[in-house]
Image (cartoon, rainbow, N blue to C red; front, side, top):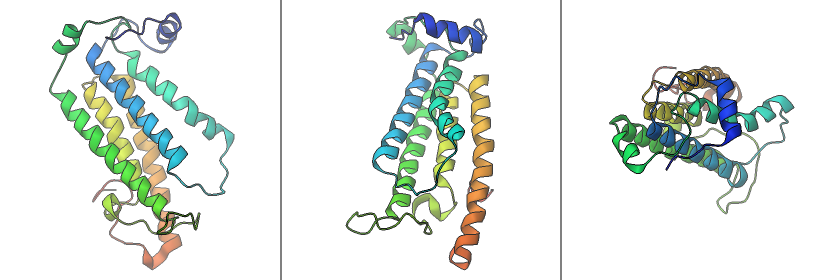
Length: 216
């Protein structure tokens, strides 16, 4: 069921992880990796077919990091897992734990609302017929935008936390990745929140938090 016994993969993991330190089981690793793949495939589809971009240019280094990030995240996820070898179905069934359905439910909920939030942001630049009429900024409303300025970033944190839950919250490398994501999104959300306040002034709701409802 789980067969990644590829020589170059094993060599890479020898360099980035402790090869004899297994903090997660085979099923948790498989579920976590499947969720990570689903997340990046969905975001790729949204980037190609949903998002409407402005004429703002990005520095080449952050742009390259967007491509390298999924690779490093995948390596971090399997770094402390069991050896990459075939596991029988019975072995995987025996690894089922209570936190697997909890993590999956959080992942589905967060993914759904993240897609809704990106759809809302896209709709601000289209008319009723679906034609693009603007690449500027407007006040987003609806769904989680009623509580926070950056619900898509909040959903991102929930998604990576959900993967950590499916790993049993024991995978140190993934916890560090999630912590890095949290710190990055806090600063980015505060920047966007302040910018909304400056651009829209009195039009922007004053009761919205930046990233975490009723907290930050």
